[in-house]
Length: 372
Ligand SMILES: [Zn+2]
Image (cartoon, rainbow, N blue to C red; front, side, top):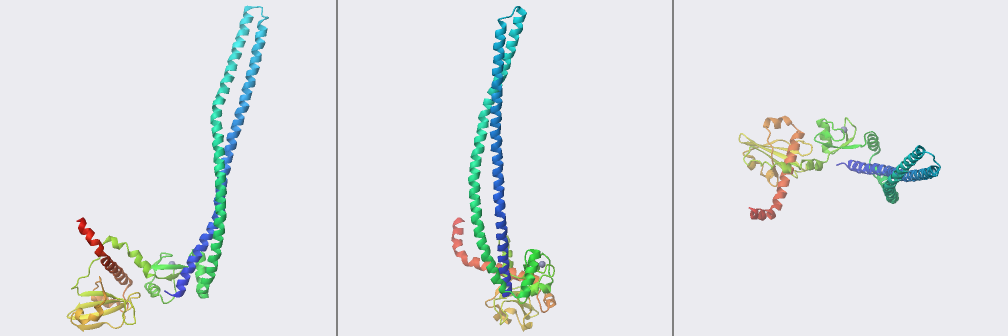
């Protein structure tokens, strides 16, 4: 990977961290405001409960006054009854007294009702008071936490900003400007390439662009979103790991007319895929650079089976699954297609996993036998 790409990736991480911190700092007062609003709600509830208590007390006083008035009326009727002359007059007064007594009873009922209510009103007030106390303590704690968090974030933000300034020094100016312009409009300025796709905009790229990115020798931009592109073989391999659980690796046949091998080193070319092919008593050898698929050197042809013809290429190499018709190999010309490279790459990873599993196996075998 180009050092400038590495710097841009680090820069992108720092930029993300800066945005996260800025968002968090902006978010904290909103959280405090939300709690304060809840507190105001509890206060209003308490006030409502308290004013209900007051209204009940006023009503009770009113009923008590009514009862006093009505009792006064009755004693007046009793005084009058001493002076009545006729039976009818007496009966009428008695009726008035009975009626007034009923009214007293009705007022007394209402007072009783208020007294019963008073209990639950009292509970409401006490609950609201307790709630308010709790929330007040909570908000003080939250406010203090928010203050501390903000102070920490401000410090981290200052660190991140100075780190960003430092990283910006490690990227040439025109590339940096390009990265920052795209970042501003798209939220990120650099994007990984996977399966011939820009992961930033999900658009498929031309094979030539893909090869340029994979070779990691120059800075390449996405044609559709303008992000700086990079390729990370490790990430691609991580993506393929689930196949580990899906299926057991298919093993290459020992007597197959075509055999593919992976070699970690091949002259000055580094990692290569070697394709050996038997046909009509002759063996041919093709060597491809594993990232770009570039054909290295000439296609060699020797007499006999490839095992006898090219033993030096097989020794220490990893055998891979792969079988393409010779016409196809010829049609590729100087560059193996990416699908071929990807397939060989995936099998190489499966083979490596298999090898590492084999190394750790001896501990697992005895317990399997014991279970069986
Ligand atoms: Zn793109």
